[in-house]
Amino acid sequence: MNSEARLLQGLGNALLKNLAQCTTITLLYGFFLVLFAFAVITPLRRGSLTHPTWMMLGATLTSFICVSMYWGAFLALFTLDIRGTLVENPDAPLDKNKFAAVIRQEFVADQITLWAPLVLTIPSDCIVVWRAWVLFAEKRRVMIVPVVLWLCLTVTVFANLVVSASLKRVSKRTNDLFSASIALSTATNFASTSLIMYKLWSYRRFLGGLQIDERKMPSRATKIMIVLVESGMMYLVFQVTGFIFQLIPPAPKNVAFGTAMNIFFPTYCIITGMYPMIVVLLVKRQRSIVETFRLSTILADNGAADVASASRRPPTFGHLSFASSHDADMSSIASMTHMSPGSWVAGEVPNGNIIEARSVRSKGTENASHTATAPF
Image 1: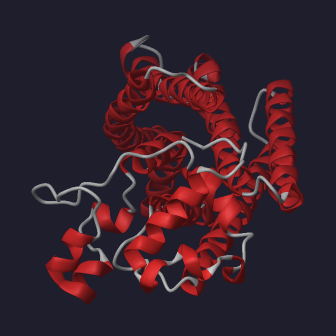
Image 2: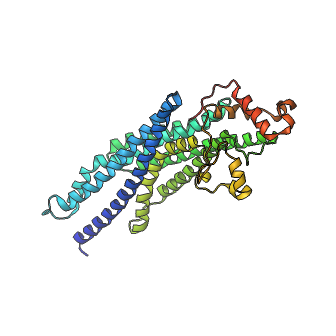
């Protein structure tokens, strides 16, 4: 096989990989646009735009801009590859000089595909830290680790942007900084999700001391924390997978593995942009991921009759219909988990009735003097 035939074969493989990337990104971008529309419309329909709402809208808008630029850059790269090698200057020989000219034309679009995933981690991980920040309004010191990790991530991202812009190419230094960014993002999510898991455990332990069975009648606060934990764990799986792929050296002869990596990283980038919007929509519906896919353990343990009693409103066709979220839910968690069951007097649990105990507990938390802001 002569050199021109090898170059033509390499061009064909590159175009196939780029086609797979563009197809994957375009499909995911369609889902992203739907989530973006719902994530913007949902808070605007509420009327009152609080500081947390503006924060979420800002993170959502930043994600939209980065993901849109990322999608557009990949389409531009695919178009430039075809035009530069097969359409423009057809009389010119297909050699390394022609490929070098195409690469120079693709510099700006190529830089966008490198910068967008890095920038996306900053607002996404900010939301990750904020989830836990709201729950620990009375113990800010436990948030030192997630906040420091997020600040280190931000510095690493901007350092990578500066280095890649100065070198005008991908180097070992930029790859190391990218790996460090993924590692810091993973550590930030793990630390924040672990804190939320601890808060959920302590909250359920508190309710267990009151002999309140959360399996049959889960509170709004429990549903929200379950959603935050589940979404954080699923996001963590993507992050760990991306970090492992980043550490594996590329194998030029392994076309299948190279194609898998070329598809995974764009998917990882868009999932990173989707994450804040997915959390907002799930929390607004107060449904865990398990319930969303109709795999609730309530169905398996207690039957359909208990499912009907688990909702505060009548169930709708095909899924449970939960009550709308209240702004004081998350602030109630922080206050209740610091109270011991012994601080409740006997008169507050009339006749030992669990339903009445829940009613009394709800009234107590609604009147609590808490200033923490609800996350959504």
